[in-house]
Length: 439
Ligand code: PLP
Image 1: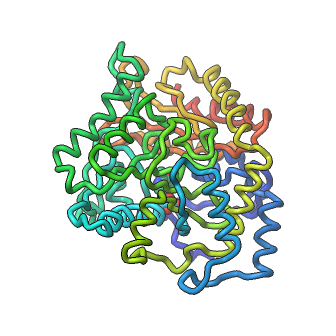
Image 2: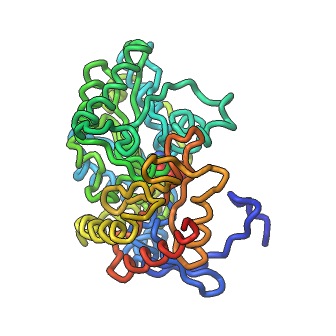
């Protein structure tokens, strides 16, 4: 024991030995309510029999067949089911092993799409500040979290970043939601014109921002205007739904809420629900046709892409989610959780905002509710709350405020879609105890 290279080298983590429904158990039998699905992953909880059986049955048939030689039954079936439920125009699925890989594939596919059409000028990517798209070099370059980017700045690919849509701190007093959505979206047009439309390949954003800002949904009309701008300037729209997709916000794809269809959409996390590592990049028929009718080869690939075991798990997760209508449950439980959080923390002097969509809800913590001044980052409030909650047996996802003070520490909740009344009570009760350090 002791040779695993952990994320945090200075703290000793308990060993997870079992999972049951919404709970994880450690080596001492202590149980933890998983109120964040790790990082918005375990949407079916930790002991889904249907998924476990599907994995076992796939092992008996076939564990691995390299995608350079074969397709597989679970990959074909999962792709069909995804496309049957995907936003309009989305027609093909490229399976990978996780979210960062899906984003890398999307950025490269966008570039190759332009090349295949004889447009070799378009390579520039526009993204947004306070976003997260993964930790590999391309995805980190697109990401707008300055703290994550800083150590690797000399290695990052040049991309531009616009300010995000962030009503709590960015909307003017008296400005309507629609007017704000439009104003925020028009930043994309300004950036395209600054760069020169002929050089811009794609714009990437999260429809509901997860890790860096904490469950911030786009203002009404924001994504529709973004879609219009992309169409006007020949820029591809990539939506990163790695965290907010797969039912998390109360629709299978988060962008359904905004009635916008992307050119490319990235999913992961809830796709395998933690039972297997799997992600996917889905693209429109037009993009696929450009490759099919051009070089016939997407110049990308990973050894484990479209892994049959991972696809079998993903197929069982999605089938189970749809057959049990769990997404309706997400909407129902969301309202209940939001009400309970508002009752308990709505007037809390250090809770500036409670926001989110579906079972994707965050509390932004501030030093001063009136001025919205964030806590001093040196206080690491988010980490201390995570620790206090974990000691009480509650898992919640903490994020520090941005290093430029553009948003405060926050706590993200993303519980399994199977949560019940008693879990909601336990989340609110334990979070409330953990917040007592702020008094
Ligand atoms: N994109 C978003 C929006 C994410 O939230 C994440 C992970 O949190 C990623 C991409 C990267 O996914 P992964 O950690 O599976 O590589």
